[in-house]
Image 1: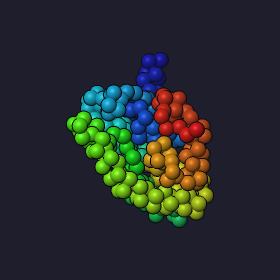
Image 2 (image 1 turned 45 degrees about the vertical axis):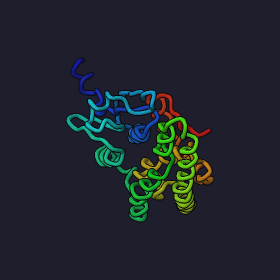
Image 3 (image 1 turned 90 degrees about the vertical axis):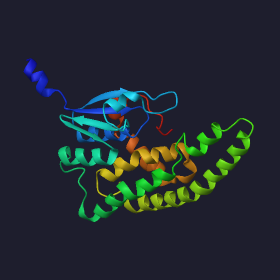
Image 4 (image 1 turned 45 degrees about the horizontal axis):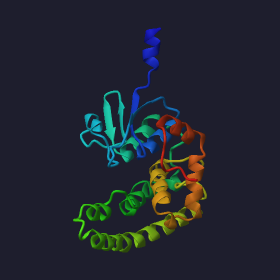
Length: 232
């Protein structure tokens, strides 16, 4: 009996930081119906990852998974690893959607991440840590810088994503199932809707709602715990 229990024990452990990119990994594993365990980590009062994650990976970030002897960090590597090892047919990209999947999963998402507001950013930290006497002036300067540098980029990216979703009428690579582009873009678009909703069109809102309504996503929420980026 003990041997049977040991054999059925999941080998994958997701080191899950609350309100983080690791939510997309839980969703992927639920879609793949792969058994896994979740080890949860709470953020510090400064909303940073706790030091305990350094015991898992030298960068101390999340997501990180362990799968037997494998320890793997970073969302893109984890998503590709899990799909390659456990994906079967559903997450595979059809030939017509291959370029869209590649571009959206890594180039488009990567550029959007660099412009999407992330508290705390340097634009917010520097005013907070400035001497009290000059803090109001520094805050006005850095707020203006944030608006000048980020807003135009967010507007362009928002329009591009909106247009692309209008074209595909579903998932980023087309087809009937989410692919790596969707798993990678999901958290980024949740952040966009939460922190800069004025740059998200109706297609983006419908896309995120469709993801969050999926049974697999709801199971991921049950396992991951409270999540700040659910849309209303």
